[in-house]
Structures are given as structure tokens and as C-alpha cells.
Length: 343
Image (tube, rainbow, N blue to C red):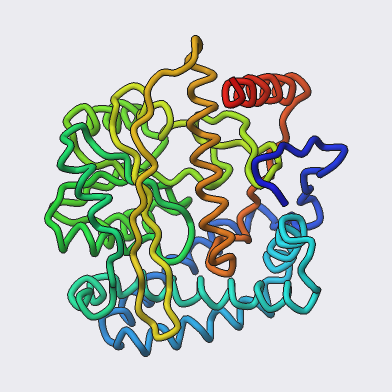
């Protein structure tokens, strides 16, 4: 499949997720969140008491358990893999699904022992193409460090500790504020500022971070309730956050991606790649934002194809559907993009 081509709905329909809805009674919410909080606190306790390898093995077991028990989440993974990799056999698709659950089970327990990993990162994290990142930092215009929900993206915290560079990470809010605060505490360092999205001042503070020539960590590979536009992702119209593109165009900051891939021996490979500096190339800001976001999505697609088992397939990436007007606008922007490349 050529990710550069746009697949209209008649040719490549967007998935629906109605069959995977979790119809939980409203009265169970407080009970469920209470249990999640207790389990998370216990997990943090284990993260201090057990070794990293022990926790990874425990996470592997939890991932296997989740694969068998979480039927609807498993169904989402299989459905989206079938959509993006139709050439896979059913057996291969099931294998990738199981590996995806196992990976994220391990990642959960690695997050719980993040301070241990930070302290032992010299033996656990191998850095590739660090020059790409440092060149952007030394350019002195600010850096947008672009991550994705793949591998163990949380380990950028360890790299921040290693270098001492000040970074600001925009993060999603967990529904339970008690867990949310614990997660922020786990991620936060003296030189790692955590900026939860959705607050009234968050966009201004993130923009100020780049205006001050600092490093801003953004992740835009999910369908979330933040300012977004419709851009193809794996050839499907996808609601995609525009923060990285807008900030890059308005500040002239370099855009560098990072990817932390799990190796078979329990270590990690952190790889940086330069996406570039993006200036205004079209009469309208809307077209420029579309163009930059398109390039970012294509880059993310390539990284996912390299290690598909380590991406968060259980996230409903195409849960929103564009209206007829939104789809028409995206097709117009896409045609303008194609004409600009041919001219």
C-alpha cells in the first residue's frame, strides 16, 4: 500500500468501533477508579522493590493475561491491523496482536520502575544518531521533539536526565486525578517539566517554551480532543493534532523525531531523526499546516511499519469520522499539495 495516496471512503472505508463499546454502568466508575488507584500505588511499590528484569517478566505475564481477558481491546487491535496490513494471514495478525499486548504489559511495569531505569540507563539505553538532536539544539531556535505511542516513549525522561537539557513534555490527563498526579511525579525531573494538556494556559506555555529556544516534546499519533485537522494517516482521513505543525511554522523551531524501540534482550534503542525546519510555503496558513502535518504523518507511518508490534493498536485511531464538508476540504488541500509537488 502506498501511504502517499489518499483512499476515499468508497475504496478504503474508515473502521467503526461500535462493536467494541464498553457499556459499563455509570455507578461502577468510582469503584473502578478506586481499584485502579490502589493497583497503581501497589505497582509503584513493586517498582521500587523488584529488579528491572523481574518487572519486565511480570509485565510480560500481565500482557499475556490482558490479551486473553480484554476481548474488546484485542478486537480493536485485530481490526486495525487487518485494515492497515490486509496482506497478513490471520495467524500472523494474531501473533502481532499478542506481541503488542506483551510489549505494553512490559512498558507499564517499566514506567513503574522509571527511576531505576534512569539510574541504570547507561546499560539499558543505546542512543543512535544523537547528532541529529544536538545539531538542532545547538541551532538555538528551539526544538520540537516529536514522539509517538510506540516502543517506550517514556524513556525520553532518562535521556533528559543524562544530558541535563531542559525539556517540556505535553501530556494527556488520566481520568483519575490521583493517578494523574502520581504519573506526573514519576515523569518529572528538575529539567523535565510536565505540562498536562487541556488547561487554559497550556497552549501559551508550550508556545513560550519554543519562543525561549527550549525543547518541547509532543506526541500527535492519536485521535484526541485537542486542536486538530483532517490529514491522511495510512491513507485514511484521520483527525490529527496540529500543535507540532503550528508551533514549527510560527517559531522556526527544528522538528526532530525520537523513537525508543525495545530490543529482544530487554534493552532499548533510542533513535533520533531530523524532519527539518518548516517555513511558510503556501499563501494560506491552512495549507502550510496541512503540508507539515502530512509530512509528519508519513514519517510516523514509516516508523510504525518498521516495528508494528510496538505501536498502540488498541487505541481507536479512526474513531472520529470527517463530515462531508471536512472530507471535501481535506481533498482540496491534498490536491493543492500534489500540484505543488509537481510544479
